[in-house]
Image 1 (cartoon, rainbow, N blue to C red):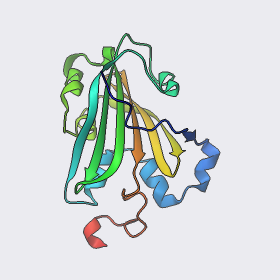
Image 2 (image 1 turned 180 degrees about the horizontal axis):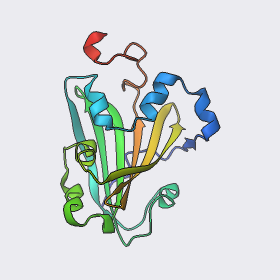
Image 3 (image 1 turned 120 degrees about the vertical axis):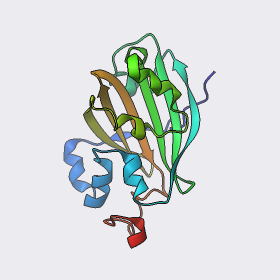
Image 4 (image 1 turned 45 degrees about the horizontal axis):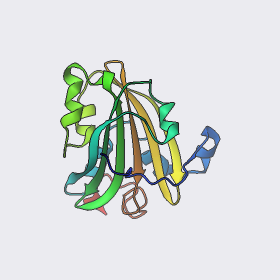
Length: 180
């Protein structure tokens, strides 16, 4: 039996394209990052680590708004983790993968354990991102992306925690945290 989701049930306000204008440019660059968030975080700490929270197959996707982002499947692989920079929690990650995506090489997704998802995804030549949605939940920024691996989908929701460099004005614009 899986635990309650790492991402709270507090309502999420998904921003419209027009609302993006109100986001500070430095913050928006984080939220719209097209590359690996793990690699971006590595510029601001000595070591990025993954603390697994839960993983396993589920039959029903909750919350409901995630259902509209993925095709219907008999089961989905759920992986929830905390991504840390120098042992400080920076991001909550929730990955949903339809069972049909877990074929061939992509079956490795169920065995990542403490490997950051970005380290797996961004080495794949068949990777494509369909969209990034930006939202706010309480005081936290978050984003949701659907990726295609060999034309098979997976959904990633990332919640940026208060200690994340996304919120640290002293780090903004630095190419490397050591320059600050």
